[in-house]
Amino acid sequence: MSNQPRVPNLETRVKSVSKLRELVKRMDSHILDLEEFNSRLEADIRNSPLTAYRLGKIERATDEKN
Image (cartoon, rainbow, N blue to C red):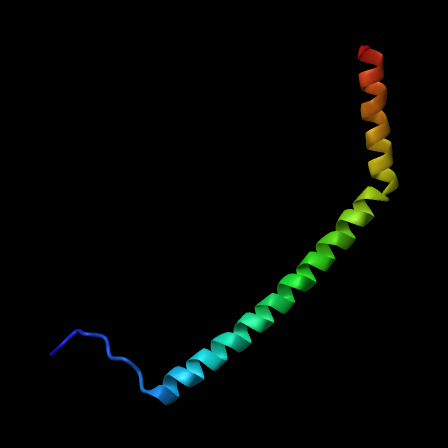
């Protein structure tokens, strides 16, 4: 018995390549969705009153040191 890998036939390769291309498209779409979600979260954090409070607290603390 040989342990040499066999090259799949053309039909199998074409199906595999097609499935992989579709998978890559779906992954790209999900990555774009995640990037958009991340941008929204960052905007929410920047516009948060809690963030403004914390930044003000840091500013006051540095002003007191000087």
